Image: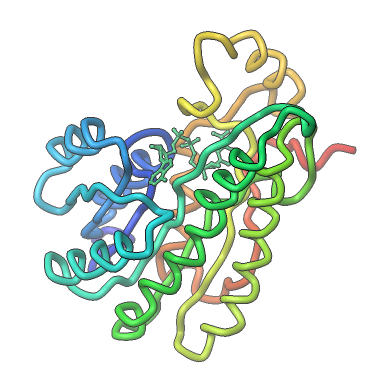
Length: 247
Ligand SMILES: NC(=O)c1ccc[n+]([C@@H]2O[C@H](COP(=O)([O-])OP(=O)(O)OC[C@H]3O[C@@H](n4cnc5c(N)ncnc54)[C@H](O)[C@@H]3O)[C@@H](O)[C@H]2O)c1
């Protein structure tokens, strides 16, 4: 039996990158999966690949009405939501002086406010299940800072704090909430034509001398989503090839 058999999951930002990897793996582990994104073509193509145990919904994670529709549609299709993976995110990298207020607010909206909206929207449904699990995707930039990512780092630190607050509040309902802190992972967010040299340089700075694969992050997310992590809540789970172990 799959490690997520009987579970119903919502995964945001699931059309590509790590979200798509989580969706593929969740279906393999026996979950029914609604994955959402603003990238409609990629999302529909993945839904075709995954078959009847997965459904794609176009969803802007910054929009509360969209969230309500996603939860309603998930319940109607597969039943009450037992897992939420708040994965959608963006990065805008530039120095503080050239960062616009609009860019700053956009990053906070997509990476941080969305996590609040998502947790709020799923709770009535999740309270109907036993053993709910919310996995909030932060970053190693939610544990330490780096230059040129002022809004990203603020949003990812916030996700870490929100996770702890929600974990304490939701423990009486048997709902666990944890944050995942990936280092550099091979996805379209990081690996592009013009970042190839930078990625090689970054890989060399990682103790394991390589960047991570989305599937490696999925291993951790499956563990947190499943009952195997039943005594873990409010915790930070790092997957970074040793990056944060160094001074
Ligand atoms: N790749 C890395 O090295 C890395 C490291 C640490 C943390 N992360 C985090 O992991 C998560 C997944 O990132 P990824 O690397 O797979 O990147 P990605 O760009 O491949 O995937 C992110 C997905 O989020 C979607 N998205 C963006 N804005 C959205 C919105 N408003 N509504 C709905 N969907 C939206 C995108 O369309 C995309 O499909 C993000 O939260 C990211 O910050 C990534």
